[in-house]
Length: 403
Image (cartoon, rainbow, N blue to C red; front, side, top):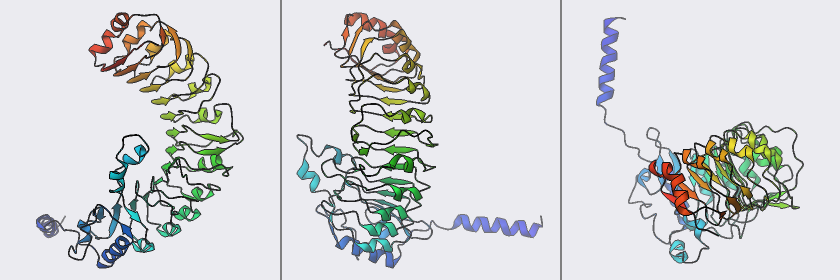
């Protein structure tokens, strides 16, 4: 290479290195949009105190993130305490204090003027009695949209389906006032969608929900906790090619079904399966042996009326196993010792009897065990002797109260 060219390249590199870091200074039109948006909000705790003309750089405002080169507004983080919405009905929770922290009011259509916005989180706020604004469907730059536990009611607008760049969509709603959808066809254009959360949604009219969702090639996490689902024919072919996490806990089927949906056992890439509180009768189906990659299996509060199937002991990647209160009986197989990856094991409140197998001492990764209210014929000191290797490797929680 010519020496003069090398000199020029070195000079340019040194010059760029000496440049000070550029501070993002927000674009005036986007600042005005935010101020209009604020004017329609109720902010009882004054979290948006920085949103005013005296603070001209809106890139430094609460909840705002701008691009460090173009200065365009990219993200709005206006959620209210991510965990509190889950506890709003529990006795002793400071509901009034929480209400004093939430944003309320209305979501102004001017928000759609933020053409570069890719992340919008309004979760756990108080827009009670309002419908999800259909104009959100025009914000096609969005890749992340979280409207969970915001008090929105009525129908999920089909215009949301225009957001074909979405990777993350959370419309989880309150169980007292769930959202509903006549169908899920609007999801079918979301080819990039990886995370879909529709907690408590009424999907009883969405007869083709399963076929629609299985067509999403990027979907890895599907949360349908507490949803009302229509009865459907078990598909002969299933194309959930990427699904890793499935939450079907507390689902309601209309009309009711009395069996575990067999299509679940075709999802061979599942890492996490939560199937809590469905009260399904009959045995744990042998098809579970197909889910060889499972790390988290939660079957709490079902009515299986069976023993623990041998095939379950073959899931060698399991880290968390919860079979609490699932009406299980019989004995615990020595094959339990094959689950060497287990970190948490809960077999409590079942009709399991006999003894804990000595192979349990092989599970050196265990940190939490619950054997409460079983019909064991062992003394605590015998259990401690079996578990001595686990205790020496870090077992921290052990519950063995008798029934």
